[in-house]
Every structure is written in C-alpha cells, then in structure tokens.
Length: 260
Image 1: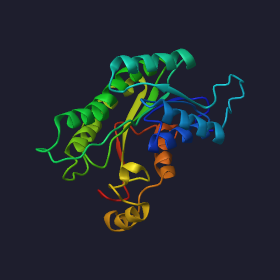
Image 2: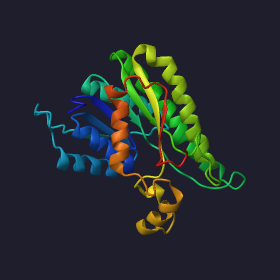
Image 3: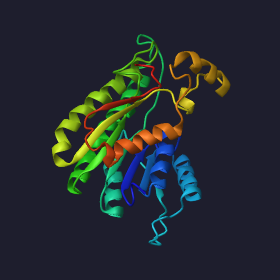
Image 4: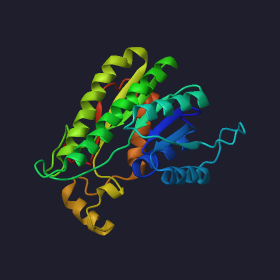
C-alpha cells in the first residue's frame, strides 16, 4: 500500500493507459479521481475498481477507491471546478497524472486547421490548464507530484503525418520542465513520461488486428513488441512515489528502445 490514502487525480481515466494507471493506484491504497468528458467510460473504470479492490479504506464512507468526476481539460473553469471539488471532498490533492490526449494525423499542408487546434488544445493547453489549477492546490497542501504524459513522438522522434501530435507533445516536455523548476522549491515535483506504443487502441493502425500489430512491432521496435499496460502503470507509480524523490523535470522515455 505504497500510496495509502493519497489523493490521486488521473485525467483520461476512462480508457487505456489512464484506466490502467487509476486501477494501479487504487490497488496501492490511493483515493483516485478519474476524470474525462465521457461519463460512461469513467463509470466503467469505477466498476472495474469496485470489482478489483472495492473500498479498502475501512472507513465505511461508501466512496470506494475510485470515483468519477466529469471535466473538460480544455476548459479552465471546468478544471478549476474539478480541483475545487477534489479539495472539498478530500481536503487536498497529492498526485496528478495528466494523461488526457487526442490524436489527429495528416501532413502539415493537408491537415485541417480544426484538427490541429483540437490536438494542441487537448494535449498541450490541457496540460497547462491542469497544472495551473493543480499546483496551487498542492502548494496549499504542503506539496505534491505531477506526471504529465508526453510521447516518444515530439522531442524524441518525428514521423510524417504526425506533426500536430508531435508538436503538442514536444510542448508538454518543455512546459513540464519549466514548471518543474518553478515549483520544486514549494514542494511540487513535476516530470514527463513519454511512452511509445503500448497495448491500447491508439497503437493500432486502421483495420489492423492485434496479430498484425504484433508482426509490425517485431520489426519496428527494438524490444520487438508493444508495452503492456502493467509496464507503463509501474513506471507511473514509480515516478509518483518517494522512490523517485530526486527526479525533477525529467522526461522519462518508455518506448522499448525506439528512440535509443
């Protein structure tokens, strides 16, 4: 129970990596808030948590280990309301995992302007707005930890057709490192985690099966496969733990050697 009764926020917690990370924190005893725009998928995460870990707090409050709060990371008022509700409910915010993200492909001259704006708004501005409201709450509570999700695409690697996504994630790395320098003195430790392909729908090409993906990854990634959700969850939990207490402003790449 490494995170016993720590209050953890996971954005994009309704699917994929966000869901896996939320369940991982819950198994380690944390109080987890999953957020996103889709109530249905968030509720599915809560049900999975109830089935796997239940309410291990022993306080009988009926909250369970994971609760869902709908919010839009692109909307400052929505994020402010989310953080306010968390602090009102639990008294503090200890850890924030800013994972919400979207993908749109297309070469620069061909990309729809609205798609470019949507990617930047969600992946970069969304992280800015999250930190804007998370950091004061953490400072008020005596400190905290933030892990922002970058990507192997961005600072570390570029691919044709992924310009908007790479630009947004490179921005996350730069923004995170700046914020890390600004707030470590006030007890808020901030880092980036930049994953490569993991076992989520985002790693699948249109019409591709899991077997097709496995064949492609054997040749595309030095380790020869996609990462598992347990592996990326373990990396997040380490970054958020006291074991990584001296890691500040880093960009940890977990991509099976793709950018080595």
